[in-house]
Length: 318
Image (tube, rainbow, N blue to C red):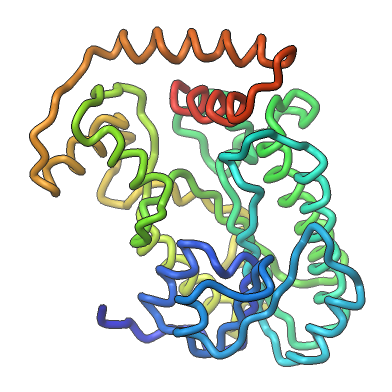
């Protein structure tokens, strides 16, 4: 792939830098002046082959000493990308893991803002989940008022909301510019991409789901990330007016209106020339309803993966 020259110039730390989105960004812009951080001691092979600096930083166990060491090793960091999240598809949903990860993010940002004299910008790769994923969101904008966090029903949504709040508060306290880029489903150029895998499962047999669900590509988002990082380095940004606190970027610009999820499946089949069977929507609706009933009763049985699958199905149905 031909790389596009990045517009940013400063040294950037990417928390959650082993993600599919980070990989796409490097495919698009290269790895120059990037420090990738992940929870594992050794990075994936693609990271080892493409980037000079990798830092193991597990946000569930990170300490002040860990972050201070990072700041001493890379004192010239001028921007931080926060692109971390707990796994969505796990045997059991543990709210304590979500809480600890928020604490880890807060610790890193607090110390970084305090110790890195050249830190200008923190970009948080947030999600529409921060506004409650289990609530139908139709044409919401950046000014949409949020419901009380006590009304949220799934730990992942609470995590994204709390990350936004913690990062905003800490950056405001230390007078560091920050921005939350709220994303929806992403199609990545990584074979392990959860969205591509979902379409592949429905490739031969699936329904044209009429629910409008915003999806975007990781290439589009990578370009948005690079643009925001570069803009934050411009001198005129000192008044914080040219970068908003929140942006929604949930679908490609050429899709001026929301499209049904079935549209993406249809395009996937067309791209791979798959001859497939369309099943009625009511079959899927019945399955989702029955599975949700199973999830309600699962509090008594504790079967693995039921809660995680139910969450994903409930999100797609809204």
